[in-house]
Length: 165
Image (cartoon, helix red, strand yellow):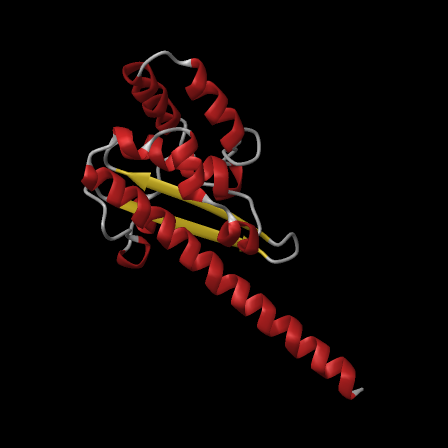
């Protein structure tokens, strides 16, 4: 089966709001951890040829890779994350539910820390897992910010060309 980053439904069919509601419904953190791991099992693994140094997320306790694909016509950034640890894949699924298939500006503006607070996530992770989760979000937001800056530069260039004509 061929990997297709645009087939990942987290962020479109399964949103951060859906996950927050599901987590609020569960009684204790043992059930929530199981739910998070199950979310991770829904993520497709990245092919080995995409597990490269430039896609590696530094600061994570486990091995984590991030792949992105930008659709300029739709102004949509597609995200895929893979890890060697199931719980980290589940945490990545939570992040993707909020950030996948959004515009670069939307990703930049999204209050991920506020969402983590809402679902009380960081207080139930080890400090190293929490740092790794923040590193994953930071890498995604960095790439989105770079894309947003490139888009702004292109739009400014187009506007100045029209003014000269």
